[in-house]
Length: 311
Image (cartoon, rainbow, N blue to C red; front, side, top):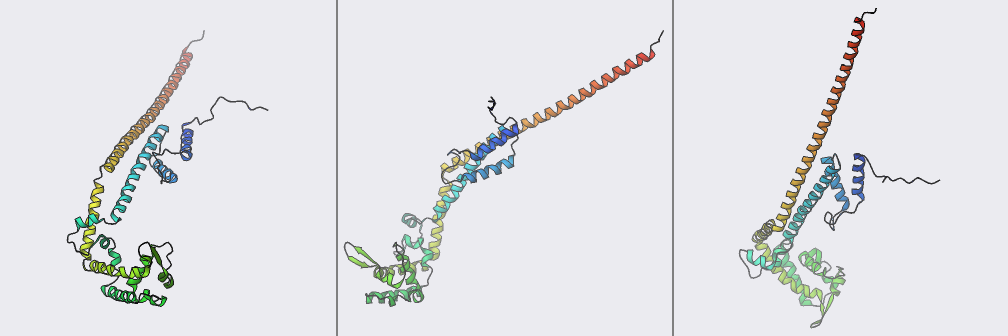
């Protein structure tokens, strides 16, 4: 038995059916890269679209098209805001450059360098007394030169400033084992000096670290103020970024136009509904009037028949 072929498309005919089909198409369709860019979630966009659709509650297909345009505008505006926030946080927290440091510092000290201001909190973990005690022990190990595991087994407990300095240096290696044996055995091969014991080299550089730590402790308030000043200048710079300003203004203008377009269309719908209601009232009145006229004709006819004389 063959199935008759119909010329109908099979698509929805009613307005409600078209709206439902349109919404389903939106759920399963592939969105343009101009709406959703790499790194953004399609599901997040769909949730955002549903939220806006529920707020404006489109009454017909044209309303839904306008509201979808509004969704895209608000999505892009949200993207710019997220970019500004993320970029601002990244800009504020990125290391201070040497140029920024030298230009904005109020009083420059011969031992100051950009590392001091970028690692200020790290330097302030320990007191001058702790740094001094750790430096004295580092000097003893340097005099001894040939180290054994026992020399650093109690490093973490007795000389924490030196221990954390060594561990931080050791993190530069892919294998970051921190046992005494591993630290002592850590070596690098230098083309000029040959085999270098890393631990001895770190002990030698600890002296400069302590000098910088003392500067950080003595001038910490001035250094913090300078860092805040540099960060504030960065904030001002991004706030004055003409590209972001122009993009935000363009989207705000587009949003205002679309919102006005939606309101105008909704007003048109309301007028159509009101006109339809009025026409129905007129039809009802006309229908009632016709009934009354018919009744009058019937009554007049009956009255005429009653008054007629029969011969």
